[in-house]
Length: 161
Image (cartoon, rainbow, N blue to C red; front, side, top):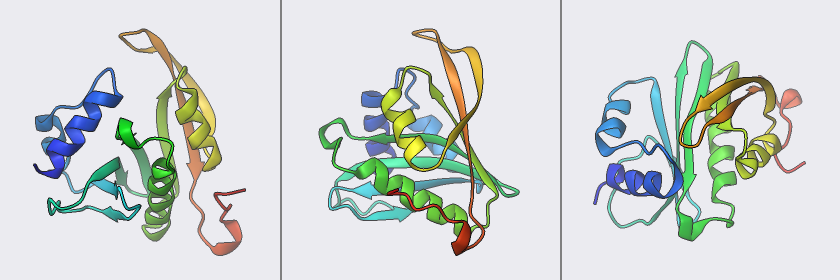
């Protein structure tokens, strides 16, 4: 099974609107879209080519264009949640954006997804807007969150604070 199939399986577990394998394949045809994968041993890699020996624990998909990034998807296999894999993905993600010299990153999340909002807040995201009735099935507002990306060591807020 390839990484796209693994991701699609976690999508099915995690979202009311899961991306299909075809949608995922289309996403990764564009150079501005990126993947970060975390495996059951805690290692994280970016833009990974699946070898088949590892057990995918979770993934993060983002786009980056002209210094602005958007976190598109993040999910952890339901059997591996509450083990810190989401945090590992976020730490790798923020490090990648710092390396790319991105200026900021934005995301949207269901207003009722308190676990995700809590994770994003730990990593320095703040609410900047609300999109009324953005999500369907069930209808729900989207919270728009954003975080600046540090340009030097003096500006970097440590994740564990």
